[in-house]
Picture (cartoon, helix red, strand yellow):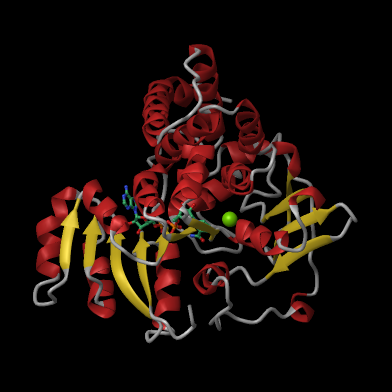
Length: 397
Ligand code: NAD
Ligand code: MG
């Protein structure tokens, strides 16, 4: 396949933060890409604007009540459209060479699997779907001959660094964390943090859910689990290192004690461009890294006491079976409850822990063998978390 070939592209979650970065890269080389399908959740006008610019064959919104609004917004374009979960899956199943999976949350699992099952190259930003489905997601990709490229910046860094050695030579991987807005805060202040404070990320501009996850370090927990499934690593082979400047994204230590790192400005267009160009490299629009200007890079050990979400991620990974599915589902419920003002910031991790404990006691822990298993555990865990919510909300820490 030559570089001159036009690639067909589908973007799931085109209206989000990762979607926006992806569309920006496509905009930079219109002769090289043809957009097959674009999807959004409820932002019909934003999606229609992208559709008019990129002229895909199909667009879909997840909200089934917005089909007429989408039709009206696309009048005269000849672009086919649909609404509801089935329409999002239909978009993913259409024959595109390269798919960006950037829906937020476990809602992205079925669409990502629809792209995986037809053997596409899938740039995976949606870590929750991998955490929800566990090993099973990667097995399905291997069966279908799909190529999963990590779009998450830390995992993309590891993917780049891992090619410096083989599996036997690998000692451990290190993923960095900015530490979020509460890195230096006392536990009592983190407990009471407001939504506005949680949404003030020091380095990255991202969607609301992942920004809250970064403040709780649940995002790093999800990423530890993501790294384990993506690269078949045990929890002991994955370390987290707090690095407030977010310049070094990931490192791999080899047996000779060489540590290979990937560096770049905190701009998601860099890892996405790597996925878009792979196995080649394309010209990226991001700012060049000026280390002399940055001057200092610092590193700290993570604090598992002030950020219990990180400890719970390792625990659930060690438990295995459906525990990471439960971890993710409970966190999604907790983040929504925090954003709605129903629970304190500190209660996010307490709800996840209580949901995991409930699941452990229930004894219903068969291994995941299908998407339906994962989705069933996800649904049960959401119900459990919702049921535990009032008592967690009432309990002061
Ligand atoms: P976002 O909230 O900005 O965008 C989410 C996208 O998914 C939107 O297009 C939205 O319309 C769509 N969506 C939401 N719910 C949906 C549903 N139920 N069905 C179908 N579509 C739905 O989020 P984001 O920051 O772009 O993050 C997307 C994913 O990428 C997340 O899994 C996140 O963890 C991951 N990620 C994001 C960043 C970042 O810098 N933003 C970095 C690494 C990984
Ligand atoms: Mg990340």
